Image (tube, rainbow, N blue to C red; front, top):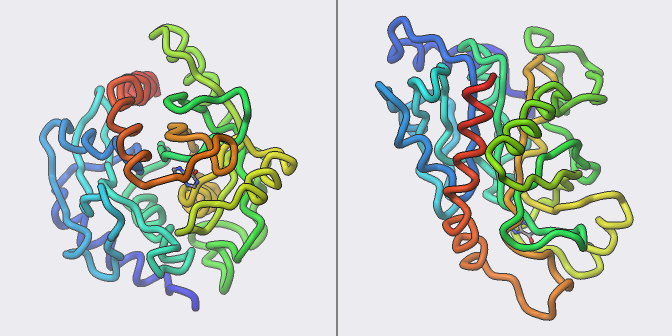
Length: 274
Ligand code: HPA
């Protein structure tokens, strides 16, 4: 199934009608724990997903389901409080729908955050990881189906999905704040079940440092339509099988809560330096 360009336009037109002269520049998709940044946006204009024609509604716990437009650290932002996941039943194209709408509205940069399981044995719960690259080789691409040349080419290059200059900016920001920032490759798993220990070993052999159920489809789509991307993972837990204990959603939410001060300071500092 391919979503026609006109649907993206209709979604964007509806949102534009709420924004007056405001034009967002930085799109922010905030995962577990960081959604509260949407609440500190100055002069906010809130648009619930459910009101936007063709928009999907996120059902995951801890996700509010609205766009917040306004100013944060001097930048004109569009904050997604809540994202769509494939495990909720959406196609990858639907998961990444909002990215294209935000591109049409004027965003040229995407900041993504997520919580994920640490695969790298040097990681511990509570670490922050700068995403330097990603692996999403199972299941289809969000770009599958008819290409929409209004957004980008049929066969987009993926060499620098995570913009090198923004990675440098994040390294410097973390150093200046005295926040330890690990780095690595995020590997996408569709979920909703957490990975098996064998899958985690596989991910490590494949070159992954963290495993999670989001982000990769949105980043592929952002790269396709020419956006710069900066991504961070909160290592909320060590991935399955590393410690001899079961994983739970509560553990992820607790870790996100415990790290939200450090994580938000870093993300806001990067935002201010864009
Ligand atoms: N695996 C996948 N997704 C996750 C995890 C994990 O261990 N922790 C938080 N999100």
